[in-house]
Amino acid sequence: MNAKTTFFGTAKQTVKKYRHSKNKIIKFSLLFLSFIWNATQTIKRICVDKDFRSLALLQLLHPNKVHQTTPLTFMDRYPAIFSACKNYFNGKQDLKILSYGCSTGEEVLTLRKYFPDAELIGADINKQSLAICRQLPVDKNISFLYSSHSEIKKHGPFDAIFCMAVLQRKPHDIAAKGITNLKKIYPFDKFEQQIIEFDQIIKPQGLMVIHYTQYSFEDTSLASNYKSLGYYNQSDYHSPVFDKKGELIKNPPPQKSIFIKL
Ligand SMILES: C[S@@+](CC[C@H](N)C(=O)[O-])C[C@H]1O[C@@H](n2cnc3c(N)ncnc32)[C@H](O)[C@@H]1O
Image (cartoon, rainbow, N blue to C red; front, side):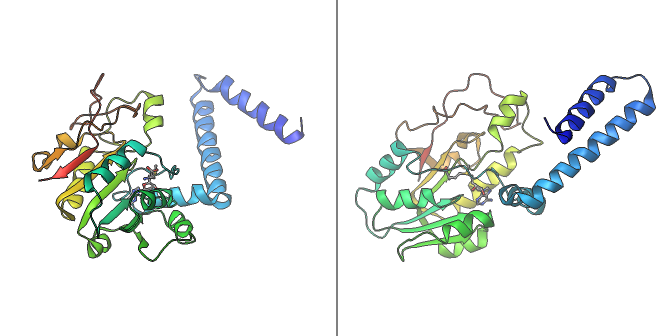
């Protein structure tokens, strides 16, 4: 054990010991010290960790626009859903498809396998992820955009919008902390507003595909303008889901994932 580890170990134990002290000066000093410690650690991570910096900046600069912050993704993540959409279009030509929240591009590369001739647009709000997308060896019918409604609209209308694992906020943290109301963290209005924006750029008979969400599409004001495609649902989403008021729903039925615009 080196001197640095020993010092921090002892400091931690001392803080633990005196945290509940009745002496207000000791209590306040410890609170202040732990605030300074946490702030220093955050600043240090912002300086040295590119991914952490990118996420921190997203939340700081675009608190109203950003949905899920983490960029986790991988190839062919939702094979049943992708296949169902491919079958729905049944070889139709000239499809235009949006991958909203494409992260580092694996979803767009996957969609290319299901839709070999489609025009594919990937949009994300994380500039670091987009920089990775732009290094990918893709064909001329694939492009990547910084996500803003006006920019995306210029490329629409779309035959299908895939919005997978985007309309949520830190679901694992929410579960771990036992949070029972999501309103302050990720309000229903924000989810619904995003659905309204998608609706403006989806063609009639086009598909809105939303998967891994903390709210239900069927609770939005647009639900009656759509019908679900089959029984494809979010039964593999094991995180908590919430009602329009942000209240936790106990034992919710799995939410549907694929909707056809009427
Ligand atoms: C968990 S990843 C999902 C990646 C991929 N869709 C998948 O399912 O594998 C969530 C992504 O949504 C992006 N995102 C969050 N808010 C967004 C917004 N307003 N516009 C576009 N992308 C956004 C994040 O930057 C992140 O890359």
